[in-house]
Length: 388
Image 1 (cartoon, rainbow, N blue to C red):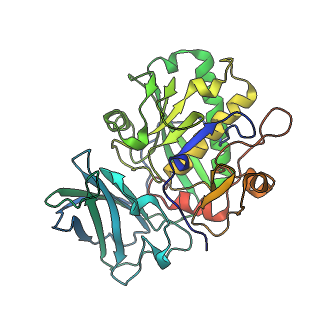
Image 2: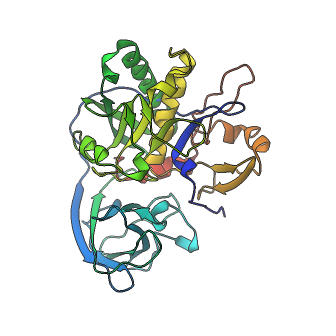
């Protein structure tokens, strides 16, 4: 059984580094403004106040035939941190820490908003009609003290999705500022979206439905994982729930080593508009030092869109590094393992995986394609509430 160490900003980020690694992610393509999916969907909100231990709990029922849901917990104080401590079905199934295994960031303290997906993996038990669900969160301040008397809002989105291994995925593309005005850049993004679409169709079983919007905003995007009102207002423009991709000049990722190509607002990111419902992409980094999009630059941009959307849907890197050593692995049984960098990149199953933490040299000055997903990775993506 693999263990998951959730304390790495790198898990959200695709980096372009000098040397062995560059940055690789998958492809996508630009599409229509179709109406929302036809699968039955329910959305409701609940609230509870934290007790003297800083804990708030809600219980709820779901519509008959529901196969998956997400639950997002929010507190209206940007300086407070919350995590899920229980997510249980009435029949005793633990959807948060099955077998005491960490399977998501839901049970890790997150600034003012956190989200969980149920079920999140192929091995997780199916939902059962008639069961009542209970969710509890714990609230702390920035020095670790429990906070009582605060109202927590819970938003539950549920669906009756007949196929948890294939379907459609709504993707909203936001061209921030002047990014959408330059034809060469717009054409490169369109080609990169085609890569995104191809990867998700062949490896993920997901047909991408793209809506495009031009919005005002900064040249340098705020870090979505930290939360910002820009992502709440921006993501509210397009259809929801969706993967919301914001493309601007650069991304403000101070403290992250390497050049950031893209970074998602969570693993998974909140499905409906919120301060973290965004995926930020740097077009400057994507174009490379010469500012001209080569065919490989475009492929890498498409892989970046697909990789970061994978995080948005709940996927971790199969492995994460500290220096040359592997320090964390994902909670899936069919992704390959390794112990150190040279072993990892020599494992073709890992090096070509869409969610590998960075691109791998092809030995000729470029990078190998990274477009492979395992069955369990595909299962995670299709189980998140944004997929249909």
